[in-house]
Every structure is written in structure tokens, then in C-alpha cells.
Amino acid sequence: MAEVVIVRDEEAAATLVTAAMLELIRRKPDAVVGLATGSTPLASYRLLATRISDEGLDVSRVRAFALDEYVGLPPQHPQSYRSVITREVIEPLRLTPDLVHVPNGDPANIEHSAADYETAIRAAGGIDLQILGIGRTGHIGFNEPGSSLASLTRVKTLAEPTRADNARFFASAADVPTHCITQGIGTILRARHLLLLAFGPAKAGAIADAVEGPVSATRPGSAIQLHPHATVIVDEDAASQLQHADYYRHAWNNKPEWQGI
Ligand code: PGA
Image 1: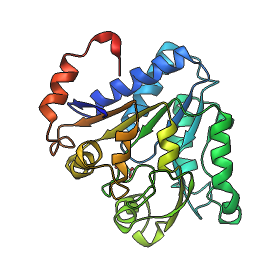
Image 2: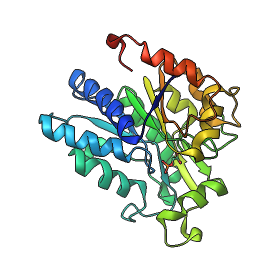
Image 3: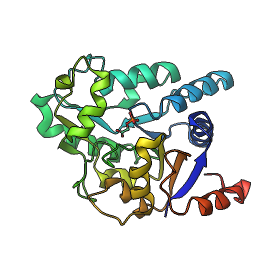
Image 4: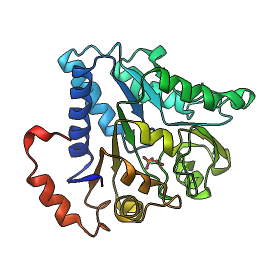
């Protein structure tokens, strides 16, 4: 099962995520990282940017793949994930833009976009460290309930609760696209290390399902139980429905330092 780390707040989570990222990049300067969008990873990206700049770490060879993109939003739209990744990750971390990939959500090319994305991930040698958020629906990437656990990158219909949650980024709820192109659950499971983050009470049910529920396409986050190296970092609120929280705390508090996450 996944390792569960219950932390005080988002900043404490960011410290762990940043340590894992820095360790990876120092060990492998052309590491391949998987990027999530949404609010959840923002504190981690900010801390990582600060640490990279403080250390003068060379990240010019780091490669990255975003999890997903809306279908039909032009890349220059401020809420396209291409724009979000540029603003929140590429610019502050000073990554090389050409090495950062986001699925192509242009409806004109959509037939080929998904297969092209899978090919690009494979050509890069696979993803070393994949950062994940989780939706209230239990989605990882935009794999809404019912997504095949073996799915690869493809077009999906967004669930209405997801569109409602993301309406905060748009002028009106009607402006949220209805479709997306997302790495599949099978794609995500191929990454060598998964780092799933969740904060706040609204995520407690999705986290309990992901960590302790039966593995089921109805609860896409539960697919992480199939992964040999998954780390779940949550605050107390997001951990509040976990039955074995005391055991996770005990395991973390007694973890040998050399093990890392
Ligand atoms: P959030 O979204 O980080 O904005 O909560 C997470 C998700 O939908 O996967």
C-alpha cells in the first residue's frame, strides 16, 4: 500500500516534496517529472523555485510532462494548463520550456494528441516522479470515476462536480470546458514514484477511498494501491477519515532516516 505521511500543513508538505524533487534532480540532472495543476501543488512549486535559486541548481535539462489539459481552450488562454504550467512552474523554476510537455487539447488534432503524448513519455524513458492532486470525485489526473485502471492518455468528459470546482478559475461556470485530455491511470501507474498530495476537509473522503478503500475504477485514486512506490502526503483535515491514521503516524515517526520518501 501507499506510504501515508500526515503533516501539519501545506508548507510542511512542500518541504517533503521539495526534498524529494531536489534529491532526484541532483542524482539525475535530466530527470523526468510529472506535473499536476490545480491549487494543491502550488506551495510545493513555490518552495522548489526558491530552493533551486538559493542553491543555484542547474535544472536546464529537467524534463516534464503535465497530467492533463482542457480540450478546446487555446494554449494562450490564461486557464489552459499550458499557461498555468508556464506561469506556475516553467518560469519560477526556470525550466527549459521546450522540455516541458502538456497534452495538446486542440480539437483539430485531438485524434493524434493522445497517442503522441504516450509516445513522448516513452521516448523520454518514462516519468521518474509524478506529483498528483486528487479531486473530490476521487479523480487523479482528470480520470473521473469509471476510468479504466489500465487507461492510457485519452479524451475524457469532465464530471460536473469537477467543472463546478474549477469554475473558480473562470468568469462563469459555463466557461469551464466539458472535455479534457488526460494521462490515463495506466500511464500514471507507470511513473516510478507517485507523490499524491491533498489538503483540507473536502478531500477527506477521496483520500480515505484512495488509501483504504477497495481498488475500483469507481474510485480512481484507489489505483495508487497497485503502485509499488506511492507516497501520500496529507494534512490532518484530509486525513480525518483514515481508519489507520495512528499506524501511519507511528510508521512515519519511526522511519529510518536513510529511507527517504
Ligand atoms: P485542486 O485540484 O488541487 O485544485 O484541489 C485537484 C484535482 O482536481 O486533481
